[in-house]
Amino acid sequence: MTFRPDGILKSLVMPGGLLLGIAAGIVQSGALRGAGTVIDFFYYTAFGVGLLLAWRFHSSRVASALVVLFLGHRAIEFFAQGRVPLAGAGLTAFEAVSFLVPLNFVLLAVSRERGVTLAIAAPRLALLFVQSVFVAVICRPAPSAGSHLFHGAFFGRTWSAWTPIPQIALLVFVAVFAYLIVRLVSRPKPVENGFAWALLALFLALNIGGIGLAARAYVASAAIILVVSIIETSYAMAYHDELTGLPSRRAFNDSTLQLEAPYTVAVVDIDHFKSVNDTFGHETGDEVLCMVAGNLVLVTGGGQPFRVGGEEFTILFPGKSQATVMEHVELLRQTIEESPFRLRGNADRRSAPRGPDRRSSRRKKNTGARVKVQRGSLQVTVSIGVAEPQGEDMKVEEVLKLADQALYAAKRGGRNRVEVAGPAQKRSKRKSAQNIA
Image (tube, rainbow, N blue to C red; front, top):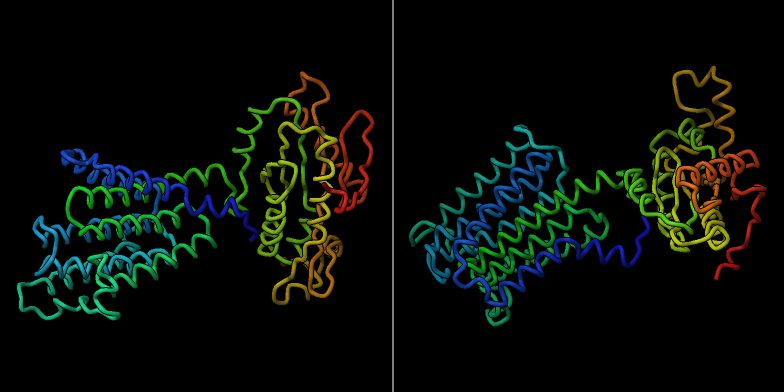
């Protein structure tokens, strides 16, 4: 998958980093003084609403993370009895929670989302029960076995004197947070963002002792970050294609409502895509779609790509005339043509389409023969139709029809080409990528 630097930065910061930054600003400003009732309401509401939304949207990972956060923080408050844990059971609970919560987060991060059911929840609840019993046992009045289990120092006390978090828990926090960030870069999804920044919010709460209004505000912020990740995921599912990550038809329809001339529409269709599915299977077809989508994201000229259905994509160029975008569209076509697509396993060795009737289906064999395979690589090409409004009163739907007509002309003309819609529809010339400014 191809990433843009601005896309990576946005996936890292938004929305979790922004929410945590706002929470930190409020805490540092001293605005929480005398706002105990408000913070308590915010705290319990965040967890209550979060669990309700996680159940409603079948997000077992977020639901489990909220339970872990709540139980961990409540354990510290219970054993510390409202005072900063400096010794005794409060300190033991603080150190145990500091160690266990990050481990739970990484386990939840790598687990698959399988919905909120009793069968899914039972193993996680059993694990939480075991951990709760463990914390309760080591927090018995001294002398208690295990009360200093997490109190050891690996590098000398002065190395970590700036934080009350024990060194072993501090190392776990750093390792887990680093892993979550790497995972977020490779899987830029709202829930991954939520896990990373919620863990950092918990770290800030524990770094000030885990007790008090400021700590509660940070923990509640962690819950809010996870809640927002659920909302962001729902939005992404509604407005983005799950397979390719491109904006979907709904997002395309919303974008067309804001279009004003001049603008240009380019309709992109993968050549012989049905043959790819019939010959190599739908998994390979999905990989082809993702490869093409990765190139569409990088289209120059201010284009906005969408997946509107099947193997068809649409690119909007707001504020750009047809003549202005042609060189960028041609560069896109050429880039896709030259992008290598390596077939996996023995897919390139198949000589007949998949299916129970492939031995007797001459038509399917001929269809599969259209796919060009050289040395295990599949040549993927696209045909593109380009159109712009022919008059001030022309509607977007009419422009799309013109672009579709140009696309059909490109298909009839031999595919792997760009065709322009116009009064005298003529074939566009293939320009070299070196001509692009």
